[in-house]
Image (cartoon, rainbow, N blue to C red; front, side, top):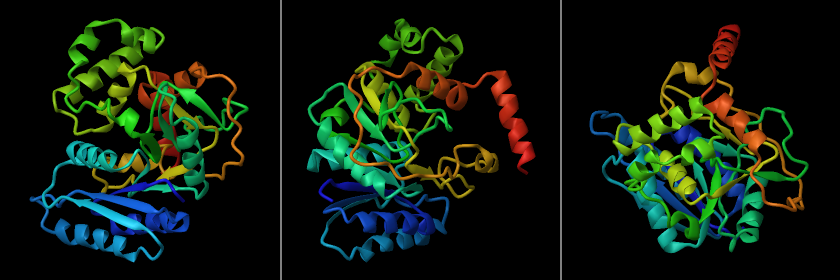
Length: 305
């Protein structure tokens, strides 16, 4: 495979080994590995971090391996964003996986084809491997266009990442505009959800690089590509995960989703229009569910205990 693969690792050797095996099957010609350092208040973590990094030494195919390892713990937001800055100083485009994002082998060919297909199309800023429509078929084509972007197995270009702004300097201006109302179809619950979340991220209360990236995409009015089937399963919902840290998270419907193969050749949509039906469903079920949706989710969690 010719497209570079980025692998973000930390302190979970078991999960890292599972994802590494799928990367090994794809045999990328360039593998760029980003690792955060152990947290100073967790003495046992240094050994786990070292065990995880050792897995990268198992590369046994013709591959250029580049590493960006931090000796200290930078935290999720700074480590991922600084790592991706390093990546796109070196390559024009890349497929990106975190240590808990287990892809179907066809995910790599899907990303590789679309990275080439949309290389020059400034309207598209990311390619996701996840589908959160839970059986609702949103397109007769291989993928659809979304106003949302996702990071559980994705790909992008230097031309898009150049707009990433860690400081979210335009947030105060954006916050006072009506763009969120138009972006979210004047859904007041959704608008309030994203306003609070972006504000908390801007103030440094959320250690998230992804919300900063999503904001950067939104102010460019950039589209994301979502596959019509799910290609990546997040295996990281556990107490050892650095961001998904509640036991309740293990039960939610986004954990350990099944993955499928995508058919080739890809069937490209003949028009580029955001799929509002799919995005409304995503907003209502994943990001800011109504009281009824929250009750249904809690009931489902009780039933599967």
